[in-house]
Length: 446
Image (tube, rainbow, N blue to C red; front, side, top):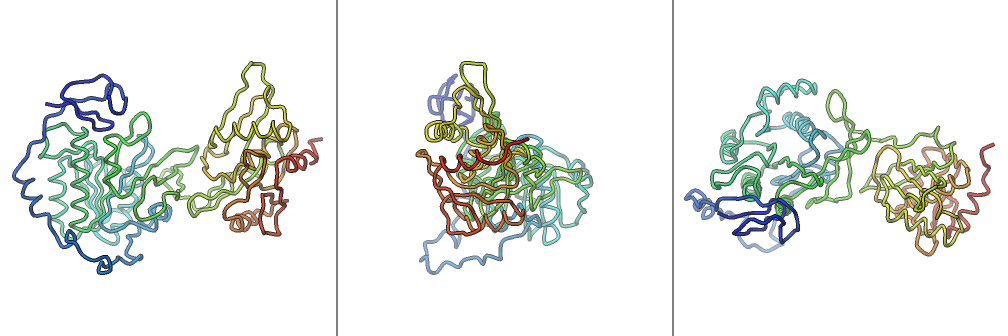
């Protein structure tokens, strides 16, 4: 017998209330030692293949880029780096009910037009899976196979028996178990072992596998952290306002900065090519401004809202939704130091409209403009702001400024204001003092 922390995998001969390794409380579960079977020993001895041999790097045959398996959902493919790579293991996670199984069923239905797809669920029966497909208005293809199975060995045996399979989905890994271990499903040992089985099966059969993972109450993937190290790609589906945003936190075959936008509808998750994250009618109200941000290789315009109001409490409130609260505190301090705004007795609330979260630092200038706009009661209209704000009150240039100007030009803005740039289509400011002086001279609401 041994006790294993279900968060970090720390092993102890006795039970602890608090894990001495990661500090988590009540995470130790009693597990039985692994039972070494002859089947496992045979598989380890016969695992030497052509790919396991040492060969010169210049003799390795690379897969062509077009070999990526296209899912038929462009937002999903973009987050993966262009499509699903052969022999890869993809972990997709998210809150209950966010749409993990729904998205994968849509992907499975579209890929089944090109080859055999197996959807093995340890939580739903074939009747439930097919009824969901009908509800999503997806066509039922003879190449799409569904089954209820929670034994990993039997699931992989069924995949092997079908022959040429293009895609495999296991939903979810916390409900599967292996005969080679005597511990319960969902424990650290089972999750780690089945993830390694998926990796070995995907490499040997050259079949991409997607596994669904649960999340803890802290919002991270349930199970040991080694689960994320084993797989090739880690995807999260996050609810942000009316949107479902697909993000890659790990990707061995592409960028981790890519995001995909979806919206939940009666027919499942519908991809959104051009998310409308702003309302032009709101721009006539003080405190609203537009900015252009880049996430991965994608440009889109967002609306930044700010509210500055006098407080009657000793400590003013600072709140940021969709924007880093630490950067907001820095900006408030810079505005007081270099511009002279009196904000120590005022609440400052900032929100990125639409519930989206941005990481592009060039949205700083839009945050400043919204705060100043609300402070003076001056509407900014169809002006667009982007640029990074430094602690010394300077306005730095934005990355991909030319591409942002081209994207913003489609809105026909009144002005495009940014930091140092070579573009002649924008108004340039180098410090916040001059910028805020310009904003304060704009016409106020009559």
